Amino acid sequence: MDGRRVVIVGGGMVGGALAMDLGCRGIPTRVLESTPPIRPTGDEPPRLRVAALNRRSIDYLQTLGAWQNMAAERLADFDQLSTWDIAGGGRLGFSAQDIGLERLGVFIENEHLQAALVETAQQHACVQIDAPAAELHIESGSSGVALSLAGEGRLDPALVVAADGAQSRVRDAAGMTVRAGDYHQHAVVATVTPSPPAGQHTWQRFTPEGPQALLPLANGAASLVWYVSPDKAKSLLALSDEAFISAIEAAFPSDLGAITRLHGRGGFPIRWLHAKRYWRDNVALVGDSAHVIHPLAGQGVNLGLRDAQALAKGIAKAYAQGLPLNHGRMLADYERARRLDNQRMQWIMSAFHTGFTAPLGPLAVARGWGLAVAQHGGWVKRRVLRYALDGR
Image (cartoon, rainbow, N blue to C red; front, top):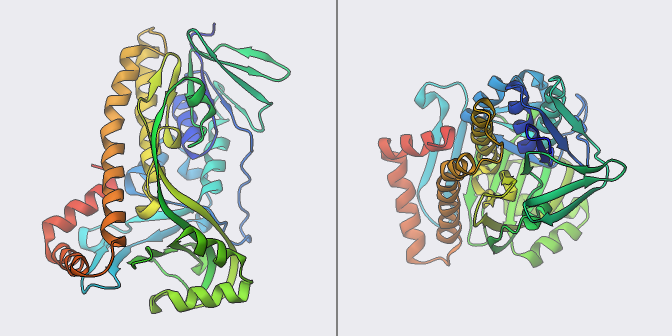
């Protein structure tokens, strides 16, 4: 058995960041990714799947050297954030200028970040990237999960990291169960060019049906997110492009403006998930294989990157001390460090979902009052903003 190698199953944003981190530390690492990322080109319209990176994530990516490998023209800074309730009078706004920063965060296409991480990780001699990887067979064994690749045979890493998403095959083979639920909503997502062009202001409006959000992208484009019932999502996605644009313009606030071009659209169900444990035997979980939260505040990828950073530190410590890379105390410390943070964010997002999708009435007044208090309460605003930017 190769007692000094890590195999990461899944080379998405979180798996790629972990590989990059381990590579920087000189730890032998292999990534198995079924679908190679394709970096967006400069003249290509924005892709549908985007992520919001906060300051802590950006700092981490800069430290790894991956941020420098991203094309500036595909990045979109945002320096203002507003949120309000359609039924209440309160409106909460944040500005980077208020706290002496140039930006609150950056919106980026998922595949752009994934490609930058994978490309940069490959520059380390100790990192091997298989993308696309051969067919992977995963089996449960007496001492953990056993992996074998078509045409190569059995792999014997010291540690297997499940970075293969919410439907993780590795997690399931390791016998790690999850708590999961459904918010009974779908997110309809559209990439558009609005008029006037999107600037650096992201906003979110709560309606009884669900939130509506605009995320500014590069070159004046925007990602629109509309949370609706599953039936309505199906109906919206079945419309012609022209009818879909009309439906968006009629339902969204005037802050959107007009839509001059629709680049793409799609939908997905909103669910939550949390693994009952983050490690077992020779397997550790990161990112969506361990936890999935409501995408309301765009914090999923930021939590996943914090998982990668914490696990890499633990692995590096075990590696330096000559301990097995699946050392129980190290993995228990990793779980302890990450579970509360992830659980806290899951609770917060669930509370927002419940509070802002409840029927109108007295609660609507309370929601508006709460937003107004937060807007004028300096300490409250600063505390919320600090957690959004730094996760602490």
